Amino acid sequence: MHDVAVALEGRAYDVRVGRGLIADIAQHCDGFLHKPTVPIITDVNVAQLYKDVVERSLAGAGRQARWLILPAGEATKVWQRLEQAVDFLLNEGVDRQDNIVALGGGVIGDLAGLAAAMVKRGCGFIQVPTTLLAQVDSSVGGKTAINTAAGKNLAGAFHQPSLVLADVAALSTLPLRELRAGYAEVVKYGLIGDASFFSWCERHATHVLGETDQTLSESAVEGSIAEARQQAIVHSVTAKARIVTRDERETTGERALLNLGHTFGHALEAETGYSDRLLHGEAVAVGMVLAARYSVRSGLMEASDADRISRHLSRSGLPISLAALELDCSGAQLADHMTHDKKMVGGNLPFVLMRGIGKAFLYRNVALADVAAFLDAELA
Image 1 (cartoon, helix red, strand yellow):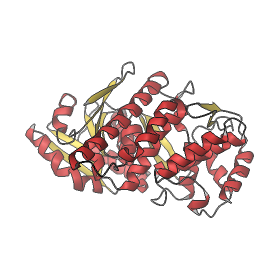
Image 2: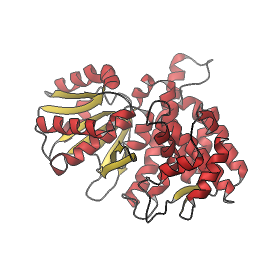
Image 3: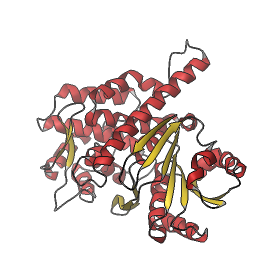
């Protein structure tokens, strides 16, 4: 088991990475729980897998789980479900000293975290992420939000968790598509500032995604997969913790680098209706390729680096082109979605571009008309 510290002054917490953390959730959360009842927000898919496991652990410690089980999927990150979550917590008598539990992927973590930020002006919450994407990215850093008609994550708050429990064993239950979507966020950490980690990804992607040498014994295969996944999570969380500690609220611009691929990706998610047609990690994968190709177009990056990025993501089973998404829109329509981006300041939208692999930077002089023309060419 590895503990990664997020050393924020006055709000420090640990990200615990290991196997079997959910089965021992009562032990890991003991110092953060002060009442015999524990409010837990999850979704229907996660509840089917872990409801009994969590209840057994808590019952062994003399505690009782109280559940709010929501529908699965991005469509849950809306006002109606947020109101439902807040009402649930208030009906459970949650006070400001309590910690609720967010058990699930990024959707549940975002929604439950925002509900915790709102209830009585802020109670604590424990993130128990069950997807690769949530374990390496969304559960760490305190960004909580829901989607609105105007765009993705536009209603939210910075609210740091009290603890994060990333159970590597939970990844064995994920469909391959979900693993691939989470893996896009792993690759991101190599692209923004660590070329050697990107090279590690090129060598170990098959292990992270659950494939390995079939000549090995079953136990050896499981061990190599678990080791690669744990290494990917620990490295990603360590990188994010370092950035969040220096720039918690994106005031210096360093944390904005974590949005590599997201400006393009969020526009694609909006165009596809925040549906299962395009998962968040898939949108980020296409977005990172677009950011690389736009960097080449702008004379900032060698085409060979952009090709290397595209090649690796494609070999990992992720989408890499707009044309393959079969969108019925123009570049101008995609660019219009970007005008609702929460990073827009004074009519100007900064983009995270690259001077090479591991050399991301914030570029503040992008003309959206040029982006629209670029996207038209990519759509074609």
